[in-house]
Image 1 (cartoon, rainbow, N blue to C red):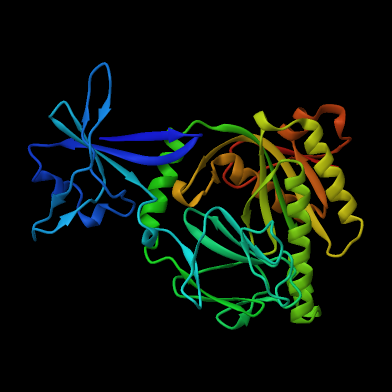
Image 2 (image 1 turned 180 degrees about the horizontal axis):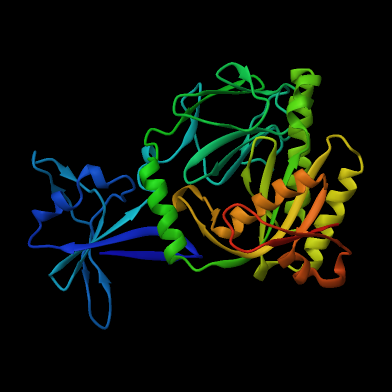
Length: 372
């Protein structure tokens, strides 16, 4: 039996309930095969009018070695409640390690640069003020993004041209600073699928504004430009868009090679703020360098991911829909568009023209799209 612990509308842990005859059953109940995301202590709990947590207690495995594989709650002396968390030892997270051995843990979006506003401050003249970003997305994946830095960001001695996924042991070079990326305990595809399914099934959906943007004609553009110039162009555009979104309380949720997905929980924003973002992005489009497209949608999404890494990945049909709408806008040659739901929500705040209704793969009903 699986129970789900929910805090802030996202998974903090999974709780497994299983029979417990005595303490010797603990080892089999918490075998390494199941302990991808374990905390590191046992705690007994007495159920009654008042819940009282006991002191941590060590148990022994079949070899007689003491261990603390997870947090255990004993319920009415008949059951073992095991709480799996994705944030126990540092070895189960991700970090970058400097040449001197210093570790910098990576959670959510970790910015690297010269100014004090960065998560990791690097005091070197060869490091830009806002140089790069390591971002958690896609359920425990770590992605490296250059933010238009002067001297570039290098992965395994090669300059990156767009956001790239990191792997354990990769060498990351920021200016003249060299780091080793570590994520010893990679998250399996099976776990990702399981977490995705449980998030969609059991976590309450939250109404959100969604925005997808990407550079138009990026492939031919990459053939026309020098590598270094393309890196600066893409990174500067990502940074500019990120600042526009964050200035209006939005969150860039995922980086997509030559684009990104951003969102605003409806309860924490207003239609006027979304209009301001649309207006500013359209002004940026007027500069035509680079040319890019964006689509705005409104719908309910599930928010989940690896909580200990600060991840909040968006999931559900509405996320799939906005990507379908972005592809539709691309095929129609429209630089900016809104869905029917977004148009209804915005009302007369933004003038639009109807582009018609269209059949989209994976959706039973036709979907309307409006140009801005």
